[in-house]
Image 1 (cartoon, rainbow, N blue to C red):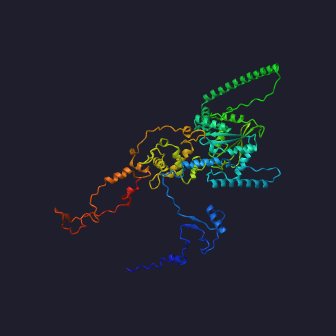
Image 2 (cartoon, rainbow, N blue to C red):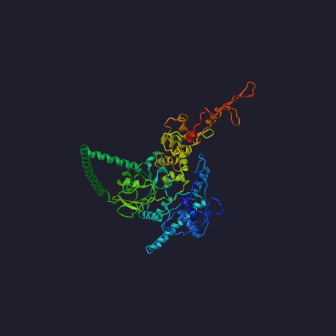
Image 3 (cartoon, helix red, strand yellow):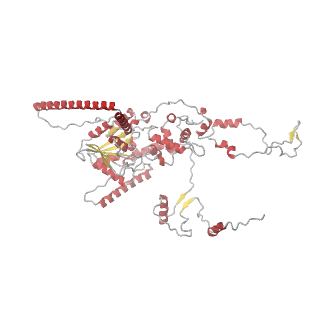
Amino acid sequence: MGKKNKAGTNLGRQLIKDRFGHTPRRKVDNDTMLHTTELQDGYDWGRLNLSSVTEESSFNAFLRTAELAGTEFQAEKLNITFVNPKQRVGLLSKTQEQTMHQKHAEHRDQLKIPRRPKWTKEMSAEDLERAENEAFLNWRRDLALLQESEEILMTPYEKNLEFWRQLWRVVERSDVVVQIVDARNPLLFRSVDLERYVKEVDSNKMNMILVNKSDLLTLEQRQHWAQYFDCEGIRTAFYSATLVEEELKREAEAAKHADESPSSAMELKQLREAAEEIQQSLDVVEHALEAIESKMRTTSEPAVITEPKLPKLPTDKNSAHLLSRTELIEFLRHIYNGPRHTAQHVTIGMVGYPNVGKSSTINSLMTVKKVSVSATPGKTKRFQTLFLDKDILLCDCPGLVMPSFVLTKADMLLNGILPIDQMRDHVPAVNLLCERIPRHVLEDKYGIVIAKPLEGEDPNRPPFAEELLLAYGYNRGFMTSNGQPDQARSARYVLKDYVNGKLLFALGPPSVLQSEYHKFPERQRKPVEESQLPGQQQRAMRIDKSSSKELDQQFFTSKPSVAHVKGRTNFPHVRLANDGNLVAGEAPAKPWRNVKKERREKLRKKFSHLDEH
């Protein structure tokens, strides 16, 4: 048959070739793997570049600005770095940590918050706004220069001036400014410069630190912090919003059950009536005693009018006692004796980072949800005032991330400053977690077996990030499409457990050794040998899929069955005689007869041994 004529069937393809096929391919002049502005695509395509642009990404904005300015840039593509998983990826060495701590101590005075510029009633709103913007830009410029010149890493502080304006207003109208900090690392969330700024606004104002999540600390650990803040000269109270909320829930459930059962309700009513009668009788006795005392004073000496001395809860020194809700309210009521912003009540300003429990603290004090809770900054846009009692006014400030020194971004992830769901690299944070939490604590907590160090490695070294994530992912069933444990998903679960306090690690004050301050529990589960696990699990939890023992065993057990002969080794019609000569036998007429053809085997089955973990 003749060849089919395909000219008529490919008419559309031919038209496309006639229209677009003669356009020469454009290449970058230097033939390198670079993004560059040398190629003016968009104007060299022979068509008008008319497209309305109202919103664009940061990368497109950068390209458009570079094009308008006539500047050239080059950004390298395929800049790939292979990372060895058996290294402390993203972490600093001991010497680097020491040098960074020295830099932090030297430049701690430069770690400031923006000040509100001086203003008078004669200034217009435009002049005041201009002065605030200028002062804010100078503050940001100073911090940027400090980061660039000294190569110091800071927390991603708030860069919106409106949030700082809310802080200024809270400080100006508050009698006591309370910084709420996390009990596991109070110094990171404490801003010393904010305490200076409060005294600059008014020397009569008072600073205070409320250590939230204190239920995670022992009594001895709270005593260390109470002594440290005593030396710093600042009042401190220990509180736990989660414990108070749990108690409130239990009380609400008990009241609900009491309402359901009428007998218990009657008993509660009788108890309340008896308590009221006792209170009334005590009031009568108290009035009688006061009358007797006043008569004795008038007869003995002239009366001197003195104001009742307000009790201190706790005493002048900071107490390590974990305050309940009522105790904290009394503490806030009697802590301040100076001139008030409003005579009828004391104003308590609540300031703190996101995710330290500021909103949870306010809700637990109010016993009703008054403030929305969120771990990310920006949930509360404006400060709001809430009456805790007739003589206590709470002033809630939006959650502010203030500038603070940190060593690495992994430290920010573990402290809850950066959101875990938005992290791009989980290896440094998990490596830091493995250095802080011992191997046996991780195995007891999750019921897993982490791969032991290989021959020649330090037997007491902390596990690598990949070792922990492989064991956790395999144990929880978090697998990828190709059958390997999903390390990224496992990392998010483990890091969230650390941030929520399920994996507990608390940093102590500088005056106490960390090894003495935080002591981990002993191993609770019986250690499991790796050889007792199934072979598939052993391979899944190892970084190196083959150990040295397996390599030795494979090498020495494999015995060659034939001599090393190049080419074909089996000749059915040739045999070896007694004298050592080759003797040709009768060759089969058709050697391919009676021979079973080799069936084609699926490649997936043929190479299944390569897909093992």
